[in-house]
Amino acid sequence: MRRGSDAGCAEDCPVARAHGVLGGKWTTLIFRDLLPGPQRYSGLMRSLGGISPRMLAERLDMLEEAGLVERRVYPTNPPTTDYRLTALGQGMGPVIAAMAAFGSSLPPATGEA
Image 1 (cartoon, one colour):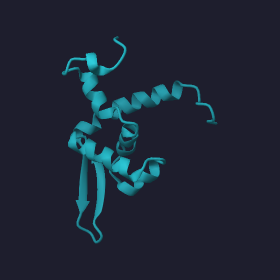
Image 2 (cartoon, rainbow, N blue to C red; image 1 turned 120 degrees about the horizontal axis):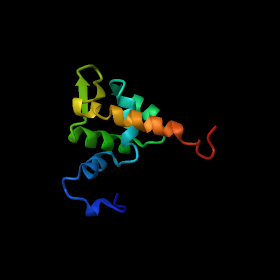
Image 3 (cartoon, rainbow, N blue to C red; image 1 turned 180 degrees about the vertical axis):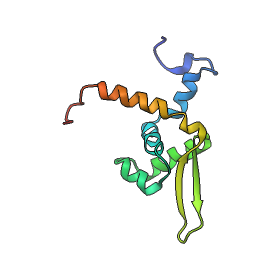
Image 4 (tube, one colour; image 1 turned 90 degrees about the horizontal axis):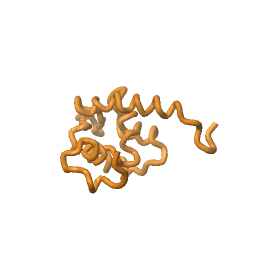
């Protein structure tokens, strides 16, 4: 496999296209949290300790534009919003499961119990 940036990949390289969507620091963790079902913004903020509100909003917007996440606004007072994976986004389930299996086989990082 070729090393280095995706600059040498053809435009239709599926790995480069996937990396373009999934390459962000928080993206796979957002998928992890949305795979079980819809989540409200505040729930995602709690689960993703350390993410800034701006970064979460940007990631969710990007995933929505890519057709992977759907935002639903409910006409309550005040309005409530939740986020859920689309059918295309649900396709990340096996990828996240594979990452979890691989992560379980790694030794704990320095400072972890």
